Length: 274
Image 1 (tube, rainbow, N blue to C red):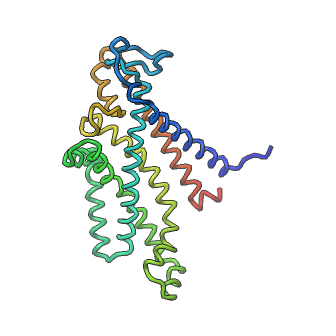
Image 2 (image 1 turned 120 degrees about the vertical axis):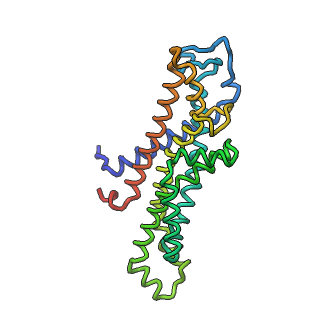
Image 3 (image 1 turned 180 degrees about the horizontal axis):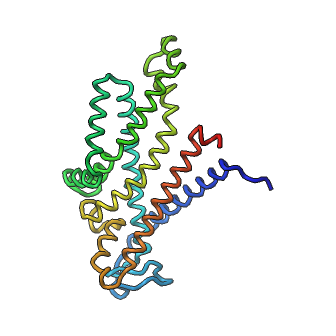
């Protein structure tokens, strides 16, 4: 049997990781609300075959709540990282193609946003926006675009110095034509990889802000809320409401991070030659 080269193995692993994450999300969507209702007869049960993650103090199945909560977190992360990614591309292009004053102003704003810890800034924005899903999305989206915007800005500045860009200008092509036909196609790999790598950060910040009580409402089965509820019972020996959902969150974040690294290897021209 012919041995697979490294690139083929990376592509297969990337497809596998994407399928695993998609199945994980779909399973959470298919769980009805009735399946995570409480029953005091089943309260505080440790992990077993009937309840792989055990039950919480209200008798709710923690495995089903974790799946449903991760789906909520992944939905929030997808929306927030998507908004941040689009904003980063627009800001990066504006900084690289605009005037020196606009570039200086955008870089000053980026430095200002990055100087404040993300969690603190997300909490402040979420609180001002009235908390809940709307405030949480606004907070995460407003704080996660800076690094990608700087990357896009640097890439556009390099592309503008290329010879074929100068030839296009000599041929009378407009700035919009050059942007659509020369700049944007080269920015797609950076955008896709940056979008995927923003995703785990968005999930972690959603979980941390919800854990602190400034994110999603308490009745929402999100991972941060599950972990916050578990803190009141961990001293009594109920370790499973904190450990097992927390490990699931770490596993999903690691899977997404590995997916982003694999996409970078596939889309990066230098890695493609390995």
